[in-house]
Image 1 (tube, rainbow, N blue to C red):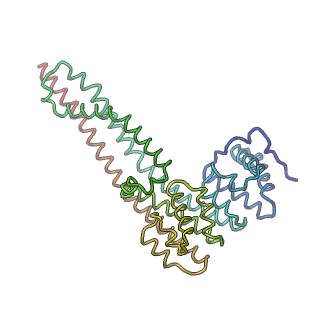
Image 2: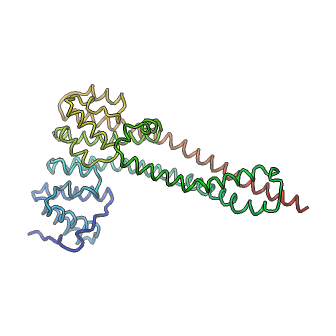
Image 3: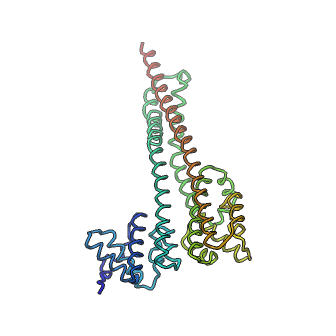
Length: 354
């Protein structure tokens, strides 16, 4: 008999698991279900194991899931809102536990690839960004606090062009810093809350930037991986889009909305259905050329996702080198300007004293 502890006071706590921990929890549950137990019994077994191991985070997650299921929610709905959206889609797909294990393992590999790329980006950017921020703060401090005091009482500011330029630049930084931060935050909120942004002039302008192109590629990879999994396990892509849209965000959600509109308008060719602006013309051409049974098409979509993932990684690494060296160069110029301005002012003061 399975013991249930999900009625405790910890039920209301939303789980705080990393992507890896979420995937491992789902795999453990699927392995229990593959042995013939139902989802309730499987979660109770996971709960028992978490208590024996002293894993408080896993115990909280198990309690939360059992409480959600007791309210009549599906397993995917119980994971929705706090877990990886792609994991939610897989769990909500209606696929058997045996097939779900393979799908979750594929998702785990994709998550690991994204994590490695993100870690590589962070490792390469953390030092140049820190150096840039430090040099910027140094210029601001020297330009607003030190140079004005040194120059106080001395006329002929035109004799110190570098010092004057640094002081003016520092004042400009101080004046624009807060408004720029507020503008950036407002812009992000507007983009996230406005669906029409994807068809606006602003979107067309942003879409020409490298950062957006890389973001779009990663969104395309995510969409193709999801569709590949759905096609692999013989689920209608039209019905899958409804599930995928309910758990998607941002550009990916917009893409699924367009796909549903195309299905409603009678489109049947996958390349026409997928033509939302997310995929490039070459990718759409490859989809148009794909054929065969649904399982074969699933493999073709998956291979396209791999190619786009490699392309996104290649562009990211190339552009990352440009960003890193640009930050180093700007930091060097800021440091040189700060040092020259300070030295010029000090030498000018010594000349005046002598």
